[in-house]
Length: 260
Image (cartoon, rainbow, N blue to C red; front, top):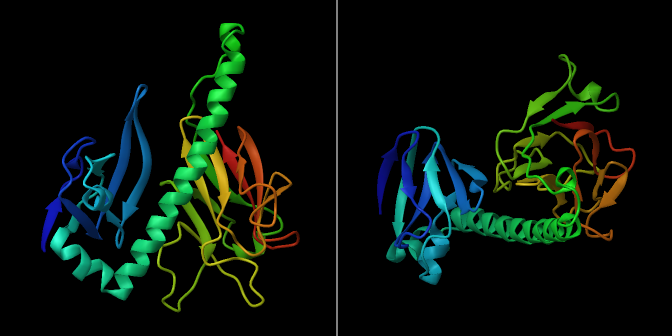
């Protein structure tokens, strides 16, 4: 195993390339995208402590996505022989890897649901006037505190711009068991209503949706509860103002999500 450095804009590998190595990010950021008929579509941005490129090495298939560096980045290059020693046999890395793997599986399932819904909408609108036909729009997203959560942000309130997707929301913890870093860590006290890894905001060509990650108390989006105890794990965000409650009714973690 050896280390390698990259500059912003460098391509680590391209979709369709032969898969021979995986990469563990020591520092920096790497953007993962896929080629679509409409052009490249960004799936996620990975940073320190995350692994990429391992699936093609495991199943001996060509790269399914392109990895592009977006900040000065250093990685550990892991070949097949190193993978078992450096990932499988190291508990700290194995847990991070499994957490990331499950995260990707949840994302794939959620994206599939969105894709099927999009195809259904396209079929319904295909015969309508051109103005009614489905158009792909990728908006911008901002999270703001509400009156219910204002006391958690005494210095002028919260205004948080989403800079990577999936955008992870979960309870802040200092006990060393939060294997995936949260993009929006929330402070919570016992009895906890926010899970360590509570929910995620996904971005697709058609917009945004929230996916609950099987949290105990669920998530409420625009008044609709989602989660393992409810009919759906996901809820789409609409253009403009959306409400989100992390946890049950009465949770102090209530926010606005603004979709431009």
